[in-house]
Image 1 (cartoon, rainbow, N blue to C red):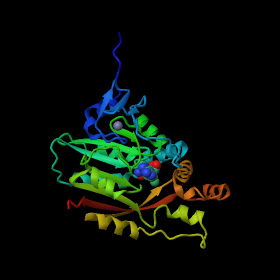
Image 2: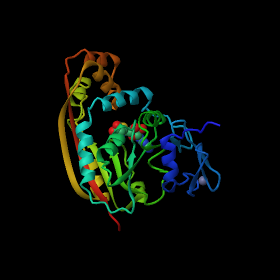
Image 3: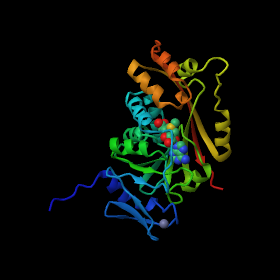
Image 4: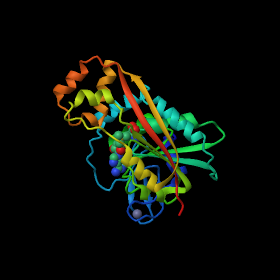
Length: 295
Ligand SMILES: C[S@@+](CC[C@H](N)C(=O)[O-])C[C@H]1O[C@@H](n2cnc3c(N)ncnc32)[C@H](O)[C@@H]1O
Ligand SMILES: [Zn+2]
């Protein structure tokens, strides 16, 4: 009989089974014939063909759908976020993490998975072993992640009710996604790190300017998010990053499709922007590095 080839993602789930807990009864999980994860009370969660696990207890309707996340995947692959990914990779490599065997990194609200995959690739140097796990509530996002990036573990799940055991992760990445600090603290190891990326007021400025007129325009400030972070974490450092990303016509269309900024904008206005002569886009982020307070 021909040997069945087991996808790398499924092998990785088996090797890291200890980080998972049942989201219903919280007991430990085991992998059953590389087809599902099952807990001691027989709650069962399927593995997809590409090896992602769906931990959602019911279907969740999200605006982060297939076409939006395919566009986000194209924009990520175009290098639009490369300076950000490089900066996060540098921040991670500069940390002196004391971990017994390998460093577990969780990307929370990972979308279509490009950021985590590229960061793991950048920081892998042979002497330290990193394990990347991504979770997102959008099944479409995780479908793309597991199709494109085989070297990480991908889960569909809710970041407010994670299917992970206490103190499982050395680092949590939260890139432009919602936070739940009580959950983050629960699953971070002692002295674990949180890297949170928030947009600056110039992020996608050209689209904001083109989509909204003066009266509609909201000036975005990330101050409230940063203050909330500081209340929950010991802030180790703050990094500001600002650059212009070149954009061609095709990618402008994908950029508009991938951003929630366009959700409430009329087709007419979107068409006007597509026919404008925008050739570069402003990108601005604040990266917060925090350490879990262990009190
Ligand atoms: C702006 S996107 C950022 C995605 C990715 N981090 C990136 O930078 O490309 C926000 C993401 O958060 C996810 N999200 C929102 N609420 C969530 C929740 N409760 N649990 C898990 N993911 C969630 C969305 O599905 C979406 O993929
Ligand atoms: Zn269970």
